[in-house]
Image (cartoon, rainbow, N blue to C red; front, side):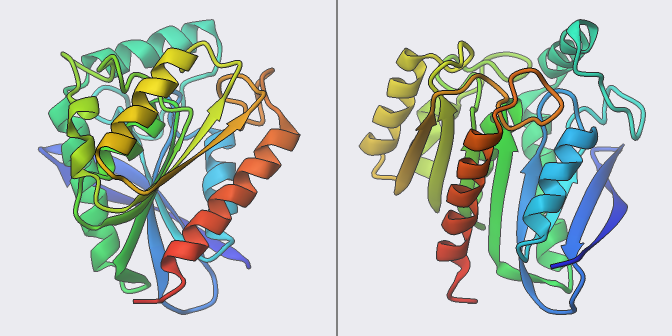
Length: 248
């Protein structure tokens, strides 16, 4: 379906956070998705991913994850300097601030007239995959998709050590984890730690593996894999549709 696009602003602890919102054009009530970018924020590749999902009937809200450190609308270039900048922004952001941003976007989605407040999910990539995993600790999140999430076993996310791996039992909904077997940032050992934690916590989850590298769904990079991306989107769309099918 066709979509509409807009930018809204949310205040979180005195910082203005821009949120890009892509919504289905036909007037109706839809599930809402908290969408997390990678460390490069909301450049073309991430916006295309958000728009793609919105076209399947979701109100997708994507915050700028480094709004406390970067100017509004700043896109970090996905090159060597950009990687250093994005990683430094991540390191300098308090984990509690990430969590506060999560709460703010969920509250926005619940209050939006086109969103079913009982149908909230999340989707994220790379650091955003980790943030989507943490978002699953919120009671409203019924479905979480984490694409090649980094730093969950090690606690690498922001300032200090994130306690994500120790809080898996707080996950309320179902989870889909998309991984590349050639991804050095989420190696086999980390994948097994994550899977074991989900099993021990009795979380309903599914892991899909592709012979692909890190950020393989980012269409402007040399690691982009169109076949793996198409398959991953099929899994994601089916996952969300199955959970939100009851319209309640």
